[in-house]
Length: 410
Image 1 (cartoon, rainbow, N blue to C red):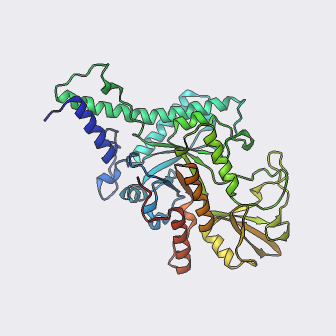
Image 2: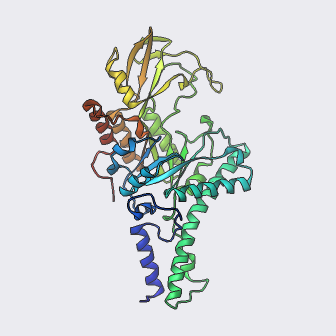
Image 3: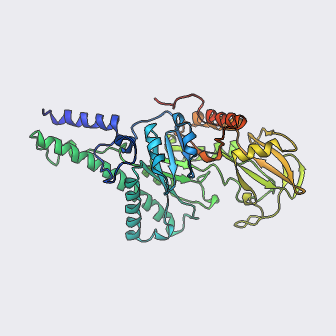
């Protein structure tokens, strides 16, 4: 049965919307899942009112994730196929973390080679996109500034254009079988489908200026990417005017950073605000009082002090330290964050972290600024043991990350 070109176009797009990206090339490898459809890419047309990213560091913790609240999982290159199968069964996209090769920015051939390698990895593992990670310093007057922008655009164009080309090819083949002969002027040949293909996301500093030493063409990069993940850490890498412990992601600084991105003209729905599921454990050179933990000097990029003196502690370990603390939980109403003090070997430690109360407050920024969603570092930071107390603590975090049981869908 053959239909008109217009009807064919509409039906094909509807199929893509509902079932995924049928026109995209699939890996020729065997599907490791119990059902072959679980190896199909999860369509980015499954839009949600609020996206919920979870970062995973490997292992089997994923078996205990609350998949009903996750929309995208960010994984390392050694991700096991069972993770992908479990995520796809719950209609969760799995995107591969790829560290941008800073040393290849000025070499077009090496950039193309890197993109091809990442594409093969995504296809062979049946994944849904890429998370671009870049930690190198960049300033507006350097060659790297424009090179980074160009590289990200090349990556995004490669993935998104391939999806549109595949859809056009599918429709043209369909029309040919039905006896239609569209010309080069046909709207069919001009199909652009920005919602198709692998998802492209990139990490961004907490504030879009060059004082963080991460200076990019933020607006141009935002146009290339589907989402920008605004980092939940490194607020206090350079301490210029004080040398005291501080909250991991202070509420008002978080608000200011996200607002600054929006003021640049970046679509707020592309912004994913990061939330830390780990605490910062500061050893105090002198504890004046709880909340006044004076730090030892740590020179970093000219500043006399830095948050680098702190140790990252997963939330599950933070809760264990809290139970042994000498202060119990304190709350700082300016930073909108909890903290406590413990002592070991005659040294006081002050731990700043995020818990259900502070996470819930960070979540209000999604509504105030109309953001695309949130992203939690890391799912592995929570406890998944049978211990009832730890199980309740973990459930409270999941509930804070997504207050309702099901994903916030349209």
